[in-house]
Image (cartoon, rainbow over the protein chains, first blue to last red):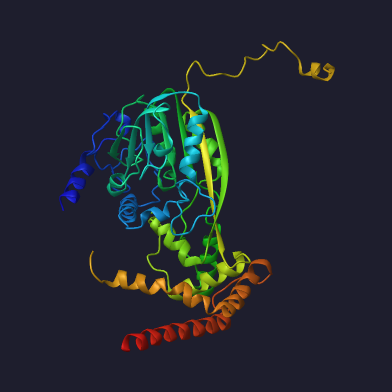
Length: 355
Length: 78
């Protein structure tokens, strides 16, 4: 029970990272989960969004990490192998390897990089020492950090909440985040903190689920609950739309933004496998307004509806994961700026005269 | 949490769900069509709109469950 005592002490005196806490680069980091709601001196002041229970998310991630066969749920985060046998495939890595691809696209070496919500570190295993010299991995879940995948880059692990980064300003050259931002309560605040810990001319490359992810599951449960129980409660967490992402990054101070979408459809035998896999990934619902119970009738009805409305000919059902990739740079004088008005040396009208 | 508890027992029971559900594919399709029709048609979905179809599905499912339970018992008694 000393862990709980430790957490209570931290709740009393934890300063917001905007006050400039030092980077804790040792293995035993501090647990940054603050109390929900009142009492937090957040950057955005009053009216903080509080959708998710961060403590519950930590417990879910810890539970998922210590599963015996946790690797089989990594397919979304890991590398995509063609024609995988379902029990052995690691499809989760698709996102991790694609984020690493985007890092490689930038022809630079990053001395110090940060992975937010990295969990078992699916990005670092695809990166090489020439691109990133030192890596810092944060997550709320200690079990995930303990079981992280090996990488050739020297890595420090920090136990920290994504909403309260315990790092000084202008520390990192590169910040990456893969499939962790969709559980953050105050996304604008978190993006502002990322902007702060970046050095000028540093880059943030992120991937988060958004938009229409799991809309089949959401609709099936909604229809089933309406028909069986007369009303419905949200079972899928709210996602950021791709159109909002540009605004969010701009407001946080990033420029030269790039946002693109990746639609991944994964086929499952049935609705139970979808839900079991989501649980195994550590992606169970942790919103405060979640219903803790799903009636057996509703599960049966949802299974029938999912199969009928979205099933394919071979009997499998698809689940859509819409991954939003974003790249944003911290401003620096060396970055290209729009040209001043009136400085044009050629006219668009001349285009018709070419050829 | 080690040993057998309500969560591990419930998880074990839920593991049988896909097999049992597959035995009632026809009833499930009929129920699913009834609900799916409300998304395209003019009729709005309300409670127990497809109660008849669901009852058929539930009876089929319950029979599948008791069949599998009695199978288990006959196997273990041998």
